[in-house]
Length: 503
Image (cartoon, rainbow, N blue to C red; front, side):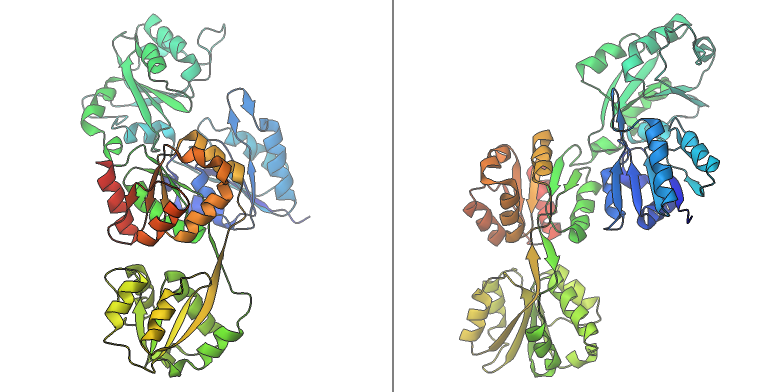
């Protein structure tokens, strides 16, 4: 039997960027990804498109699978000869039951590796401005399970011994036992006024913290609606959060922003929003696909030297054009006599990355501005190639032809609605979205088609941000209220406009 291999991976505490390089490499290799509740869903986007995704999360009183069933599932997939990535929140060996899963694999002689992860016991306090150790404040820290009820007859945790510990105490998974934990610590000698912090969803943009003392933190947690997943920090280092808190000071902290770009393009916008503290939720409403036939495309490319100008209207057009050039084995040097126009700085960069210089980039990224900028450059009889999407506006062709140009418009790629779950989108909107970004007319149209006219009421209190006037007009045609329209029609311009709105 061809046995596969299992990687037991620590996914970190919430911020998906805290995973290790090795952990990410293992996800990219995996045929099957088994992920739990505390592993960031963003990590799944790094898996192969044909990877099997299995949710095995365990919430209090609600387990998708029991631990024994998870063990059996990991084993089953590995015995099928597959590479399995078992994604676990935090570190597999810190209250993660990774040892149990590894033992099952060892007993059946299935190869496995442990990929350590950053534990929430250190990372979550750091993101809240709390160092677990600090000179002259705490010289040690101690990580304790919070799942054990301190009032039961037999305890593994020795609360009397903890009283003698002067370092920071960190309880994981202890929300339901918080009151009992605090009372037990006080009972065995801890100062009732010792500082305590409880941090919910740490290292994510939904992070929330309540601070108090052993005597009043339970009440403050209830008042602030702090729930699982959360950790408890006991010690004087908690007081440092007022000085050292950095994460919650980011300008878009706590904002849930829906990103509707294609899966491959979403990351550029998502990363910029993340750096500003937002929680980008990717739900692609557009997919770029290859054209169904290449006859017209190939005819144009094979006589590329007849064109005086090529106008690229998008990054997708650049990628698709040069991919076809390569497939036809046509040397890029055949473009030596062609002048290039790029609509937008991102399109310009895509061309420059190919080692090509761009003749003209309009200041305003719309057809009317292009024509204005080219009217003294293009002459009657000039052959112009327009490699772009199948649904692009015709105004550019019409205006170029009025100037006497001979235009060949080729649909180098086409856009479709991806196979997405309508109910998932509805649930995302119901759970709470602050803002939705649209970067093209297609993203708007497809979004409404997926959502359904009957569900547009869910958008009533959500801010709508668009990349420019054409997208804005499409949104208005779809009866959406546009709150933010980028001054500069780029991703950076969109982000800047969101920042201005948020001030």
